[in-house]
Image 1 (cartoon, rainbow, N blue to C red):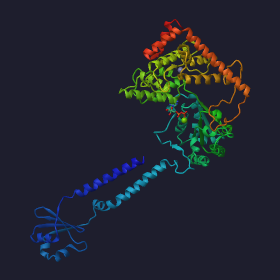
Image 2 (tube, rainbow, N blue to C red; image 1 turned 45 degrees about the vertical axis):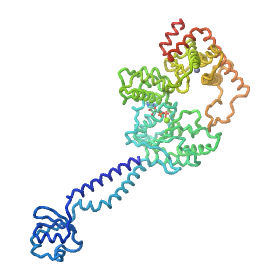
Image 3 (spheres, rainbow, N blue to C red; image 1 turned 180 degrees about the vertical axis):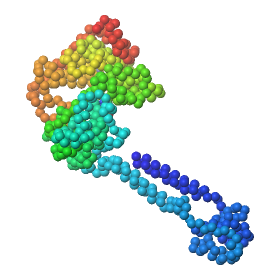
Image 4 (tube, protein in one colour; image 1 turned 45 degrees about the horizontal axis):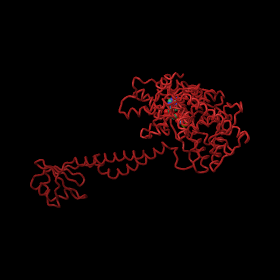
Amino acid sequence: MLSKNAFSALLILLALAFMYTALSGSFKEVKTISISELVGKINADQVVKITVMDSDLTITMKDGAEFLSKKENEAALSETFKNYGLTDEKLAKIVIDIQNPSGVWYWLAVLLPFLLPLLLVVAFFWLTARQVQRANIQAFTFGQSRARVIYPDNKKERVMFKDVAGAKEAKEELVEIVDFLKSPKKFLDIGAKIPKGVLLMGAPGTGKTLIAKAVAGEAGVPFFHMSASEFVEMFVGVGASRVRDLFKMAKKAAPSIIFIDEVDAIGRHRGAGMGGGHDEREQTLNQILVELDGFETNEAVIVMAATNRPDVLDPALLRPGRFDRRVIIDLPDINDREAILKIHSLKKPLAKDVDFKRIAERTPGFSGADLANLVNEAAILTARNARKEVTQLDIINSIEKVMLGPERKSHILSDKEKKIAAYHEAGHALVAALMPDTDPVHKISIISRGRAAGFTLKLPLEDRHFYTKTHFISELAVSLGGYASEEVVFKEFTTGASDDLKKATDLARALVTKYGMSEKFGPMAFSGHEENVFLGRDFGSSKDYSETVASLIDSEVSNFMKNAFKTAKEVLTKHRDVLDALAQKLITEETVERDEFANFIKSYGLV
Ligand code: ADP
Ligand code: MG
Ligand code: ZN
């Protein structure tokens, strides 16, 4: 930004310098003669006219030629001539024209060398000052808040509700906030209590930040945006003062919105933390609570906060009068996905065959951010192939890239590795095809992708909102299908199954501790399995069950795993001929698509 300004300043400077030279160059090249030479010419009756400007003399000759000369500054011209012995009659024959040097250009030419540097300095300071003002809230010192602001007149960054696809319920809830910010008086006049805090909850990438911006955009108020982790940055004591600053600024700009992103970074349960950062977090959180409580009801400042971990928030934040409005933003359903895809491809040239409905069908579980990324990947793919329009195939190919990472064709497997990978993936796919209530296999491949050596991609036919136990039991068997296949075929295991094992173990543990799907425990949930113990309340918190129960849980988990492995092995052993054929197909073709796979399975009279 600064360099851009410096560049334009340089340009101006160059232009001025050019003008200056052009101007002075526009005077004709004329010969300069001395006064004695001039007197000689007058005596020879060659001179018609002398134009005097200051000490400069312009001499016009009979033949039209011009010369320049200079007299002494102070002395009058007639005086000078007399000193050179010029007679009065000779002098009387020529016209003497005395001009006041008042021309604009003259003055410019005189003043420019002094003014120019001054102007440049002034311009520099002005530009810098303007920049500081723009980012006026961006701080030079630790204590000041680091908030970014979007002003309502910022057309480029402003977001409106129409830019947010889907999220219908969330928008409906938030319209009320918009109304209030637009005309606070209307509400206050009838004594309505205005919510101070709104908590947006939803998975990462579901558009929480976006929708908060849209509320500010719709209401036409400034949007102060800060991530909670920015409050607490290495230096103890700054968090609280940043909070104070932020609220002060927002109140000054009222009506306005304060948006605290990822509030769980400071809003976790106070109490049992760990490490030095904890005190700081607590102070920052306290300061937020103080500010929230200190709001007068007539201050039209609304605090919005976003989190994807509402479960770990300190209950004090959720009390009435604080973040008591809660808006849940779900992952987009099929129609929302279609709408989001449309919004993000508005400015991209699309081929006629693009069908967003079908893309939406193939992307269950994608968040808004994933979909935005998908469209972008498709555009990149198009550009890289030097085509002008994004086709349906580009988008479909990008789905896999977004889900699994880029293809690594250079990652070449030896023949032996290829065989193992083929049997591994064939194992997953076959178990998936033969177990009840599983998601259909979408694609099998032994081309490495991201971290995986190969993959079996399964996609649900529709959005699922809940899952059955049968589904989970089948999923466990499918996860272990690769591992089981290695055992059945090679009587040996490889490291390739480690991710599968981890995923399956996590799922089995959840079945026991979360979903109450274990027969031994029945309807029981056990807490104490938070993954994120960093700085949280969970660190060192005792489990709410005894060691005996813990070991029982472990044995239940192990039962689920063993059964799943047994099931997978049985399926694969029973259909060993299909497994061999499928693995062979993968070794030769490397990739098998959904329809091809379905036909293949059918040709063996299965399903
Ligand atoms: P979050 O804050 O919930 O993690 P963001 O608001 O940062 O998610 O969303 C990331 C990006 O995903 C947005 O900038 C936008 O491009 C896209 N996006 C997410 N949800 C939507 C939506 N409902 N409509 C349009 N774009 C969306
Ligand atoms: Mg966000
Ligand atoms: Zn696997």
